[in-house]
Every structure is written in structure tokens, then in C-alpha cells.
Length: 94
Image 1 (cartoon, rainbow, N blue to C red):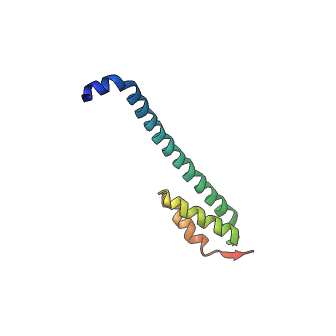
Image 2: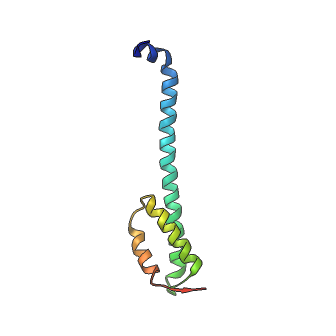
């Protein structure tokens, strides 16, 4: 069977699968952007709660650092690096 014959017979199925793959790639990109935004918002929320007193609970610090690691693995931008450096100098309270 020649390639042209194959394409002629299965063009509908091929176009369906190509469209589905493109849709999945777009969906995955959107999900990654949503995840980065959520992680960034969580970290900024912790920052807003702790910046005035320069005190952070152990659990907030742990949550911030876990979110930071995931954010960086997802190639999040670097503005959060400065916040991380400042938070690391906060007094850890219970």
C-alpha cells in the first residue's frame, strides 16, 4: 500500500488524532501556567502575612520552600527569589 493510498483512506482518522494531540498540548500548557500561578499566589500570601513582623512559623516556612522548589522546577520567573532570600532571614517561631 502506498503512502498516498494510506493517507487517502485514513485522512479523517489522522486529522482527528493530530487535532487531539494539539489540544492536549495546549491543555497541558494551560495547566502548567495555572499551577505556577497558584504556587506564586501561595508564596505571596505567606510573604504578606509575615513581612511586617519578620517572623514566620516553621510550617509556613516549610510550605513556602516546598512551593518555591516546585515553582522553580516549573521554570517560574525569578522575582520570587528575592522574597525567598528575605524569608530565610526571618525569625522562625512556633
